[in-house]
Length: 212
Image (cartoon, rainbow, N blue to C red; front, top):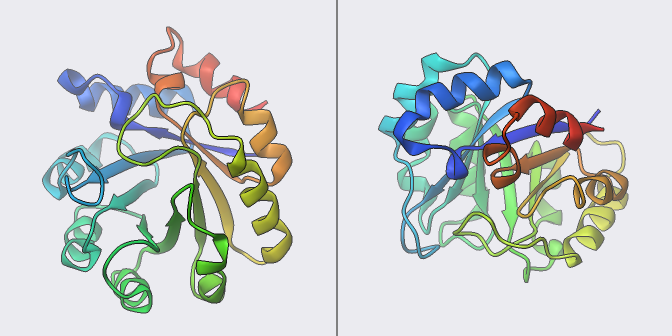
């Protein structure tokens, strides 16, 4: 069954600890952190201190997505804060092998992400070295955007290329009860959902709709 990673970007920031607990009780599989530096994307979000303070609020994996120009400066900090999976972008300015090595040194699972306009060929050489591919179905930087259907072909192509290797495919952006079935059919293993879950009156029902 597909896993749901609930993104905190659309959560109620005034009660973030309670939100993490609520998502956990509601049946989400992962807690997703969108980390923005104001350079790689035109927005700012969470730092490692926030991740560390929220770590005791849930036993679930912390899925940390670094939308950062120079992730190498921050990988250690986010790993030490309690991240279980750290995803970096192929479009970042640091060298991809160096980022992968640094994440592995910290004992975290490795993810590589591609923006909507980036060809998946940039990821293919690193498939044997990673655990997760994150396909962005919106331009990273803001929550609540509309799903770009072109992402479905990327997911399907990756599924064909990866085959049955132990590399999961995640999709992030505009995931809701309409787009989720298409993502699952294309071959996605993980659906990152922010607005759809966080703005629902019943978190559990929203998560179950995405899974089914």
